[in-house]
Image 1 (cartoon, rainbow over the protein chains, first blue to last red):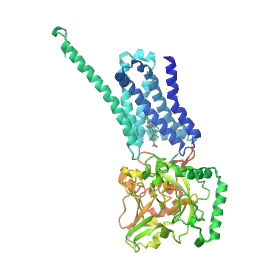
Image 2 (cartoon, each protein chain N blue to C red):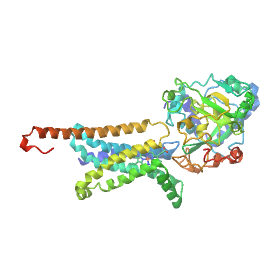
Image 3 (tube, rainbow over the protein chains, first blue to last red):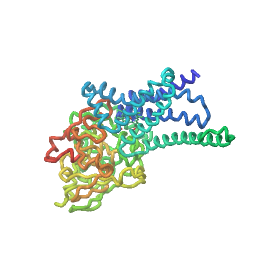
Image 4 (tube, rainbow over the protein chains, first blue to last red):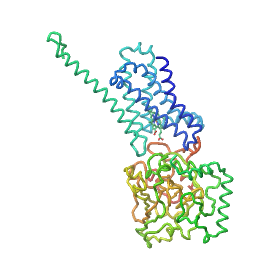
Amino acid sequence: MAKRKVVLFLVCLIPFIHTGWQLLYGDKADPLAYATHATGDWALRFILITLAVTPLRLITGMTQLVRYRRMLGLFAFFYVTVHFSVYWVLDLAIINGVGFSELLQYVTTDIFKRPYITVGFSAFLLLLPLALTSTNRMMKRLGKKWKPLHRTVYLIAVLGVVHYFWLVKKDLREPLIYLSILIALFAVRLFYHYRKTLRRAAANKSLPEAQRKPA
Amino acid sequence: MLIKSRQNNQLTENHVTDQGIYRQRRSFITSAAALAGMAAVPQLWLPGNAVAGARLAFKKTGYGQGLKPTSRKHITTYNNFYEFGTSKSAPAANAKSLKPRPWSVAVDGEVEKPGTYALEDILKNQSLEERIYRLRCVEGWSMVIPWVGFPLVDLIKRLKPTSKAKFVEFQTLHDPEQMPGQRRTVLAWPYTEGLRIDEAVHPLTLLAVGLYGEVLPNQNGAPLRLVVPWKYGFKNIKSIVRIRFVEKQPRSSWQAAAPHEYGFYANVNPQVDHPRWSQKTERVIGSFGRRKTELFNGFAEQVAGLYRGMDLKKNY
Ligand code: HEM
């Protein structure tokens, strides 16, 4: 078990190492834009991969998959953080030496004046509590509230996709792909959810009258 | 790598060529051309039927002195040319299917000498010059390109527009066989751009046929493209097949696609942000750095007069 987690951890780091390597040695025409785009792609992919765990479990019956979900979710958070840090921290603050007050101005106009960043940043803010409540202790403390809280990851995924739609200039194919995946994942969940309720109702009906639960 | 190996060798050669050698070479080419004289230029140098990568004869100019050209590799592999795909690398990968020779340009509208002109005829007796201009893309980056071409006004004078010609409209080739990106309607094909006539005859406005001293690679808009250095890159229409002189302001393809984001003028202006991103600074291609974007891309002195009394925020 633990070994598999180590392997998964290293696999999840590959895009980060690859992007960093390309950034430094890839002779990229626009290295910082490259890194922003690559980490943005991986942020969205990890959100969707995390969201895929439950549908996959439902389809394959592999219950052990759930054990890897926390790590995948934390990697989504990691890539989002790296993603906007490349722009705000690495590009503006470190490499191009934008002073603190000017930087603050950049960040606030970005957040408030550029809708796609407003949406992206909202997604990040919503991810923050999920990352903070991902520990076993927090899970216990939150008890029944933990699950509904972590369902906001669907909203986060939607915001991530909207963010992408909003920033492309003209060609919508890639954001459409991500949207389709998101819809498919949601459809699987809905399907299983309704099947469960239908089965319950059917099972209920087949019971003798006295044992039936009220509908 | 989808680029032909011959081109590949040139890429590497040029990539390692440092500034000094490049300059020496240019002056060698220039003096060789001067020695040969324009009439006696060897076949290889005749731009009318030269292929991508062939050396051009041209004279140097002072435009762009002190600017360090972006590497040839980045100029020829980082392109926006949606006719070959929407990613930056697609044009270099897909533009092989374009056949830039033979080529002709249709001229019509409010003009005394309409007709279809073969590229050879357009370039015959037309001396070429090198101008180093910074190209500022509306997306927020810029690169420095040593163009080889001639002022558009030279051609316009020969075509003799009438007094009704208030604007010039340009069109790119529309042929999905040669331009596979046109199989999808990403933009309204053919790509259309326009200039006000005074912008078109401005001495800074160039028709380019080459870069880095050689015939234009297909992905950079072969065989003939517009370069208007004080405007955002998308005004620089590529692979031109039609020039119309018109009375009414033409509608450019990007304007048609998103009128609230891309205007007719598209002058570089750090004070007028794109609705979705800032235009105050630009990333410098081939580096990690940014530079402050300049009004009219640094040509305010030469072109601000064209827009006197106009609200540049409204006429973006
Ligand atoms: C959950 C949060 C987010 C997700 C999933 C996400 C995802 C993405 C994706 C998929 C792209 C497109 C990459 C490509 O074109 O290949 C992108 C681009 C970008 N994102 Fe985000 N993003 C998020 C948050 C943010 C935040 C908070 C910022 C704030 C700075 C930001 C700034 C950008 C920028 C500047 C681009 C490039 C835009 C361009 O110039 O084309 N993103 N993001």
